[in-house]
Amino acid sequence: MKNQKSKAALEAYTEKVRSGEVEKPVTLTPIEKARQNPKSLRAAINGKCFDCCCGNRAEVSRCQITSCTLHPVRPWQRT
Ligand code: SF4
Image (tube, rainbow, N blue to C red):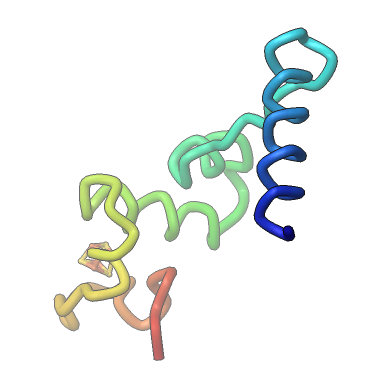
C-alpha cells in the first residue's frame, strides 16, 4: 500500500518535471559549493578532500593519511 503511494507520487513528480511545472533541484558537488562560497573554510575543506579522493565521499571518510593537516577536520567522518 505504502509502496504504491510512493510509486504514484514519484510518477506524478516525474511527470511534473518533464512538463516543466516543477524544476528539478540542482545538486552541486562540494567543489562547486566551495567556488560559490569562497570565504567558507568548511566548504574549502570539503571541496579539497572531495577532489583529493577523486569525487568519492566514502574514500574521504576512510582516509588514513593522518599526516595531512586536513585529516582531523575532513568531512564525512564516521566516528
Ligand atoms: S584529509 Fe585525506 S582526503 Fe582530505 S585532503 Fe587530506 S589526504 Fe586528502
